[in-house]
Image (spheres, rainbow, N blue to C red):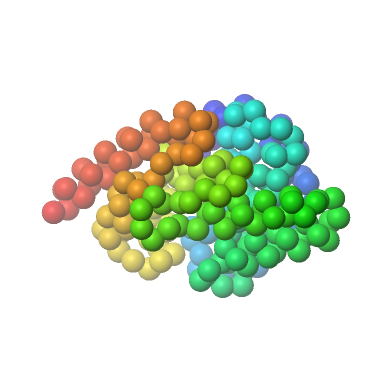
Length: 211
């Protein structure tokens, strides 16, 4: 599925994804992830990277911010290479190591990336996410962009398979998440808000029909 926002920013997305810090982790994700991961795949990281850049560009973030956003998105699930629990911390560590090794980035840049990645962690209660950095809004919106995409049910099935839980339970979990979720960026709301409402209505119908 290709949203118009991705087509509009295609050249910029290609340029930023070509940065060596991003390209290196995408290559590693392609070869090192557990094949039982059906949702948190290399393709998911690609999707989040592209969407984060596109959303940020739409909201007119500066060039350096877009690069940092792309790096955070590319690494946000890289911790799955080592293990699933608390993978955000490992992801942040991997990003920090790559940025320090590269040598182009300040300590402030690295700390910002860490905060962005840690902000992708789903909160157990209340609002789905806590935003603690100036760029986290676009990354968090990109990470949950599936809630506002037309392939929402397909992505939900992939996550249910990965978690090894019945689709009926996954539908209820997804509805609960939707009720706690909000878009944090202007571009996220404009691009994904309407489809999320449609997806929520579909979920309600499916859940009611199963009762």
